[in-house]
Length: 570
Image 1 (tube, one colour):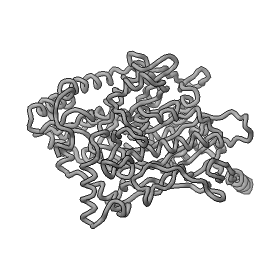
Image 2 (cartoon, rainbow, N blue to C red; image 1 turned 180 degrees about the vertical axis):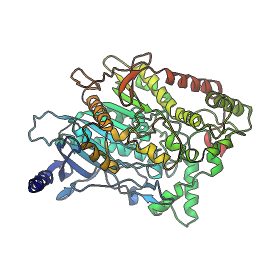
Image 3 (cartoon, one colour; image 1 turned 60 degrees about the vertical axis):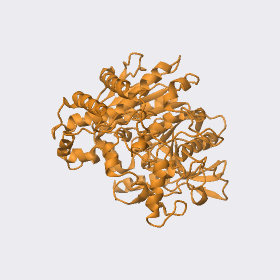
Image 4 (cartoon, one colour; image 1 turned 90 degrees about the vertical axis):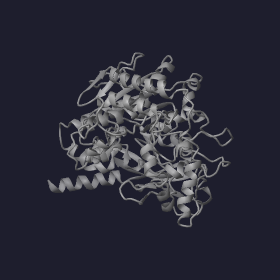
């Protein structure tokens, strides 16, 4: 018996350890064959394929340039752990990734052998967190491959390297967004060689990556994809378009000057480290919006510009465009990873009793002095809405609800506007993710050793049920040994729905054999899919209340008020 098992694994390893050659516009490359964790379906993967020149040396802080043809055969068979330069999320002053990072990974169920083969739908995955970090290499395609979809994951510049405009006259800006566009152009030119259909590309992202995708709807680059999946983010995020980076740029230079360094020649680590010191602690505490120093900005119109239109003009712009099918949603407790200090030290909440230093979910409008009458009025309205007027160390659940609503409001706003744009044969599918399983890595990491009893799920907790998250490999393997496993059931259901949306523009089409029906969202906001241990459709009543409250705050205190922009208050 043992000999038979041994022979099986030897033969199986020989079957999957098979390389294949594909020719793209730049030349030939070799990929590797692997097997999916659940269905053991064989597929091909091509790691670390360059889609642009390395943005180093003279190309630092410049728009991406096309990758030239290469000599010989490019080896894309070895697992690639590349990430663009960013601050290490664990080690203070640490560096993660590198500037040479413009690569993509391609996962395909099959390589076409003839020209007349039926091409498969393509999902392009962008990962992002707070506009400053991204590491798509940890997300695998197994569950989508099992559903006959091609997956491409993109690495693009983030933070200071992705969004710093080095001087006012420089036409290079929003490099991180332009990296995505360059990658999409590469995919459209080459994906047929991997069995993918260039005319059926779904762009999918979570958190700030979803913001990037929705911003691309405002641009000519929207022609490069046909459907969108937005998970916990939209272009109405309060973190973006808060200025032109002049102040941030000067402070970055000042930080580098302390070490006798200049931007063009400083080491990657020194630039990343300096970018973490742009704002003082008091500035961060007094900001009335989320603080991220380097995010997308509006560009003056030129032959190099990409983002020239503001989200404020989204409705008017989209009225003149073809509206894309949309699958989008949010998680019930989006802010868990944003308020970790309060989770571990709830007594910090007492600091808000004297002066409640609030934040609002708008990226435009006023910023009031904390001693002003208007500031006090806004503060009291928010406290009454979320805390019934008083904040104590026992207010953690209320605080989480408040901070999560700051993230949900831009999502709800986007949905409401998109619903008004919907035309015949175009549909919106909306979900509310509240499943609490063993793969909710963000919530588990955020809570850590805390004794806090926190309801709901965090931003990003849905990802590992659609894409295979490499750090959780052992959890997936364990599921293969169990006949009944709720996590596995949720994975199967969600991945089928996401794949069906990429194929048909409908998560539960007529040929769907699952137990759930997910109708498109109606004009009155009904038909939201609630994802828990079992799936069911609900209405949008709770979210409508959130939307109305923050619209009231905006209309009363922010809209059409003449006040100073963000940087004038620093």
